[in-house]
Amino acid sequence: MARQALGKGLDALLKQTQEISNLPTQEAVQAVANLPELSVQKIEVSKIVPNRFQPRRVFDEEKLQELAASIKEHGLTQPIVVVYDASLDKYEIVVGERRFRATKLAGLTTIDAIIHKHLDDQQLCALALIENIQREDLNPIETALGYRSLMQKFFIKQVDLAGYCGKSKASISNTLRLLELEPEVQQALQDGTITEGHARALLMLTPGAFRVDVFNHIMRMKCSVRQTEQMVNRLLAEQNRAQERNATAEKQQNPDIYAFEQDMQEALGTKVEIKHGRNPQKGTLVIHYHSLEELDNIASRLKSKML
Image (cartoon, rainbow, N blue to C red; front, top):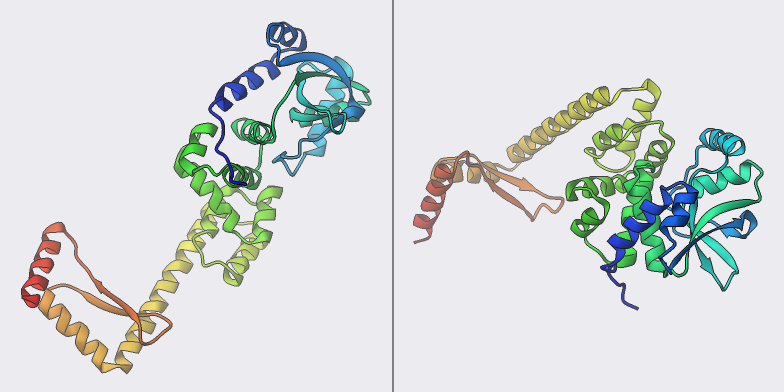
């Protein structure tokens, strides 16, 4: 079955759900009075199940305990949002899993809930992911996984996702890149052991054992983001110098390549490089220019050689 794009009514559904779930319970009751698709009532905690599409992987136990203590003393000030699943005779959480968990910790047996009469899986998934993302209530890896899940499940592009989540396309792209990091680096980012700044610096390095070694070093030394960036830039500079030395040595071993470079440079009046790949029979010819005028001059020389 082909994946479908998010429905046009999602923005309205998301706005309505967020606005009502942020109201105190009595105000929420009044707000849904004329909305046949919604109702507010107390339901048994035992009849509630977590959202299948919940993007949050980590719940801070200390903060849950603090919220539970507040609920025990003052009650739940804002209702959660659920949808009824007739096949299970259960209510699935749409918004408010932290409030639900804290209510259970407080020992309460019922909870105030806004009940959606019906939400399909697409709406349920989108509401759970976008609501969490917009609240900026997720760690960077949870956010990235949420983005990827939305894109894969609903076949939407980054630019469309940016519109739904109120982010720039560059922000979406940069966050998704965090999933390219090695598992141990992602776990440290989830745990808060390193920050997103550390992670973005590490992304500049070649994936694999070398990047993991650098990650382990910054963990041991407790490097700041600034220190990590400086280290990565230094390593990249060393790698570039090593590559240049290797290229020079290779050319010296092959005088024909060096001679060809010199001939091309004389003919075009600019720096020319021949770079080999892993296959010595293949490579790349690089012609440098430093202005559009210089590029026009090189193009003219090439054309004159071909005529």
